[in-house]
Length: 265
Image (tube, rainbow, N blue to C red; front, side, top):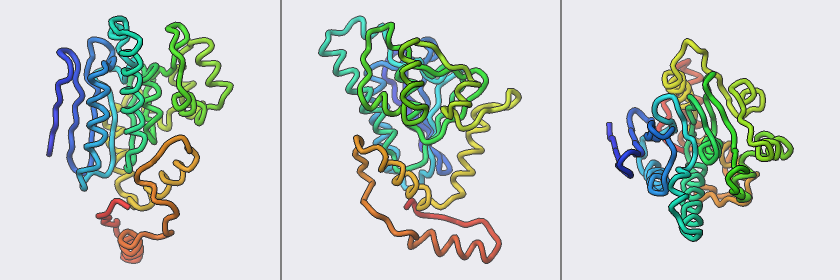
């Protein structure tokens, strides 16, 4: 196992753990509901850029420590910033979120508790979201005078539509776990008697059984609907089959065994 632990603030850090094809990223600042400082956003972006360098990594899990996901950016930090410094903080935030959105790997957010503001949008940058009965999601920025940029709004509207997006911002209300599931913000709801991390690991292992080429192909296709984003791994029209994974997939089917995919598309 290669484990990278990066201390960003005295009371907050981003942890990257890599093992058995998984990269697990943990936002750890439990005393402040995993609120992310500018330094932590910068480190999160750096970790996002680091993950694809490990050729063994097949799936990325993003989680928060304790019974939280992320309450968004550290608002107390904004209180100490000039306007220019605040603009830079939002730039770092968008950089980190878009870095995870552009990863050429399946990404899963494990949401056990509130995912609010930028934390909400960070979860939407992942391909799949696993929630529990403790999950709450929303973007109550109106009370703070924060004007959402186009990509923030698009990430929400792509999933729940423009009217519901406006409702969330207009009212500042938070969605409970049931509403999150109904609206498609959460793909899987974990039973109360099961641990969210165990459930997410099982889901990740199921994803790892699939062809990496197939997974990247569908992620590439979904990306075509996001023209405002530039995906460095998008090389245009791809073949319908992968030179490595397709033969192995066919062989394993004929031999009635699990495929042993080695590539990443």
